[in-house]
Structures are given as C-alpha cells and as structure tokens.
Image (cartoon, rainbow, N blue to C red; front, side, top):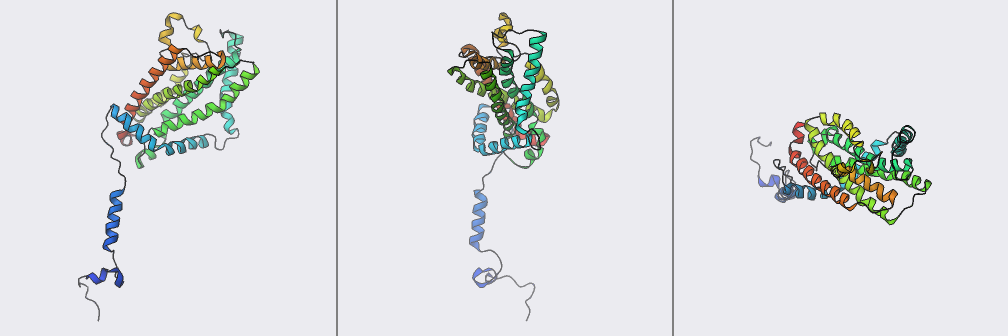
Length: 312
C-alpha cells in the first residue's frame, strides 16, 4: 500500500536511530552555537578621534601576519620576470649618484666639508629614494586593489604600509653600496653610526604619514596620484640630498628644518659620514613633527576607511 502524499511527518521519520531523514536536535543546537560564536566586525560611521587611533592600532597588530605576507608579495611582484631582479635596488641610486657627481663636480661645485662627493651624495640619495619611492607606490596602493577593499574586511592601511616595508628592504640592499663607498674612500666610522637606525625609522614614520593621508584622498580624487611624482621631484631639491645643510642661509635654517625629511636626511649623513652625534634640536623637532603628522594622518585614514569601498 502506498503512502498518502499528505500524510504528516511523524517523530519516527526524523529520528536518527530509525534511519529517518533530517537533522537531530543536537546538531541544530550545535550549528546555532557555531553561528553565534563567529567573530563579527562592525564597521561604524566615520569618526576623527584619538579613540579611532588606538582601536586602529590594536586591530592592525592583530593583522600583523597579513602585513608581513603582503610585504613579501610586493617584493616578489616587483622583481618577478626581471632579468636583473634585485639588482634594480642597486642600479637606481648608483645611476643617480653618477649623474649628480658629474654635474656637481664638473659643471659646478658643492661644499661637502671635505667628503668626496660620490659618497656624500649617495648618503643623501639612499634615504631619499626610500622615502620618495615608498610614498609614490603607497599612494597608488588602494586604487590598484579595489577588489580587496570591496570583498573582505581587513585594516586597509595594511596596503600602503606594505609598500613601505618593501621599500625598507630595498633600502637595506642599497646600503651595501654605501658601505662599499665608505670603505673605498676610507671614511672613518664611529659608534654614532648606530643613530642611523632610529633616524631611518623616523623617516619611515614620516613617509607613512604622507602615504596614509594622500592614499585616503587618492581614493576619491585620482589627481593626487598624478601629481605626486612631480611633487616628490620638486621636494627632493628642498632637502639636503645633493647639497649640504650649510648651503642653506642661516636665517632660513630653522624654518627649513621644520620639514622632517630635511632634518632626518642631514642627520643621517652626519652620523654615517661625519662620525658625530646627530643634532639634538633638529632630531627632536623632526621626531615631534613626524609623530604629530603620523597621528593626524592615521586618524584621517581610519575615519575615511568606512566609506572607501563605496567610492573606489
């Protein structure tokens, strides 16, 4: 005899021990518990506050493994299918050093305090290339990865910061040339060389501030990415890269050193080539301005983060 189509389903039909189809009550409870236990991320309305900075940093630390992975990805993609590979990190500063050496030793002269010009200019180009190349790449980072911003959540500042981490690796590679030049020209080294580490970190912090601020604006106004290479090109001649700080008139020097890039690059050259301790007033000023700019830029970036996926 067949079963009537409209027969009601009894408890025996769904009881697992009698081979019935369906889900046991325990399985349903287990799945409900798992659904409730899933971590949720609530993206709140944009806010510009100190609380935004602290919560953003705490979240960023939780995603440190993603920052590490993306930084390695930047390096692999940058030199993928390249014949010279990592040598490009050496060729750019070497080529610029050669050009500026010809110009500022054959065409005109620059006061270097008795330091041979090739090693003098390279000690300025090395931190400047790290600074400018990191900013130029990081500002474009968000608009180059719209799918990451629209399809998943993670701290969006990881994208521009990964470019800075990759730039720091290039800086370390190019430092081998500086070491070779120092040995070639018999430049005396002292323990003050260790000051170069915090100086480079401060320069990276200032680069992060510029990158975070303008990458957030770049999401809405693509003119920023188009103007940035020109701005950086002009900016290079306003900091002591190809000339020394002594070339700046004393009456303008205090205003000149309000730019952290100027003070940090000059102090980098001082501790590496001069063997002296960094200028305390200049270093404190650069550090204070960097900290202020980084805090404000990060707060602005986090306040803009909630709407980036809507406008990119």
